[in-house]
Each structure stands twice: as structure tokens, then as C-alpha cells.
Image (cartoon, rainbow, N blue to C red; front, side, top):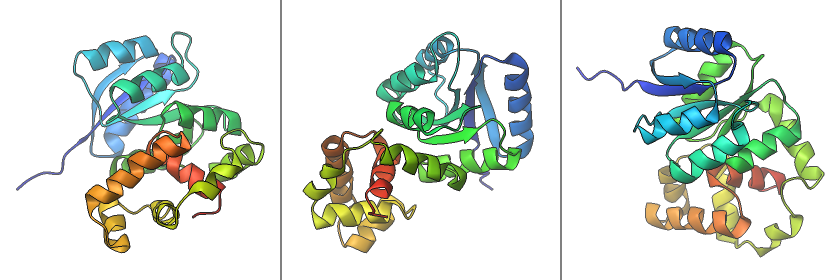
Length: 217
């Protein structure tokens, strides 16, 4: 009998008590294994360079030594396969959008229920992106105030590109999108690569936020 793969977790937070307690809680909540836990971004980089590559990296936004923004940028550049879940006391649109632009694929606040954290990790691992509904309004507020995107980019999209973005917002896999668009998975992957360059966004989460902001969902 093949047992399901454990999701490997890493955590960076400069509050040791919270960090250790969170790791212990996660081990009881789901099918996870703790790869490492550290208190700053520099130590994250050290661990990754030792080939300790987690499926999900839970990253505190505010750390004294190499904060969440700097760490997310480095990790997303050098280890793009690592799904970054930003963890913060703050839920303002500037912080959320800044972390998404830095490479985070998900965002959750520290006052969330443990089950919400489990949901965030599992969704991020399975779907590649996670943003709770409670924070969606913050994203839209930031977009409205021109924090993230300029509105004229949407007019340069083809109908196929708009369809792709719309389907992406439905939390479909790239394979499922390919089926609905009657395209090969490779063609759909080409859409993804071209659109991230064209719209100057990072990854699936950036494309989804862009699509939502421009009424393409």
C-alpha cells in the first residue's frame, strides 16, 4: 500500500515560541513533515543551499535580518518550485501586494484559525496559489489605487489570453485548462510564460490577481 506523500514544510519566523509552537501544531494537523525552522531569511537561504527544499515555505513578513520581501524575492528566483506562504500580523493591501510581487503564492494572517492555516498549506500545495476571501477586498483596494497594475494592459490581450486568465481564476489545473480550451498542455504553458512576461507579474498568483483586477474572472 502506497502511503500519501507528506508535504514538507519549512518555517521562518523570528519569534521562537510562536515558530516552535506552530511547527508542533502543524505536525498534529495534517500529513506534514518539518524540514527546518529558522528565525530569519539568511538562514532560509543557508538551508536551501544545503538542498533542504520544502514543498511549502511559511515566511514571516517582518523579520529583523533579511525580511520576508527580500527572502521571497531570492527564493522565488533561485528555487521557483518552492511555494511561499506569507505569514503576517498585518492585512493591509500594501503588504499583501508587495509580498505577491516578491514571489509569495499565498498569504495568511497570524490571527487565523489553525484549520485555515492547514487549508492554506494544502491549497497552496495542490493548486499553487492561496488567498482567503477575507483578504480579496484588500487586493481590490490596492488595485483600485494603482498599487499593482496599470489598466491599459488588459486592452493588449488576445481573446485566447483572456479566456486562459478567466479559467485560471477558477482554480483549474493547467491540464484542465488545456482541455477546456482544446489546446495541448504545452501551448497552455506557453500562454502562461508569455503572459507573465507581458504583464510583468510573477507566477500563477500574479496572473490570477491581474485577471481579478481587470474583470477577467
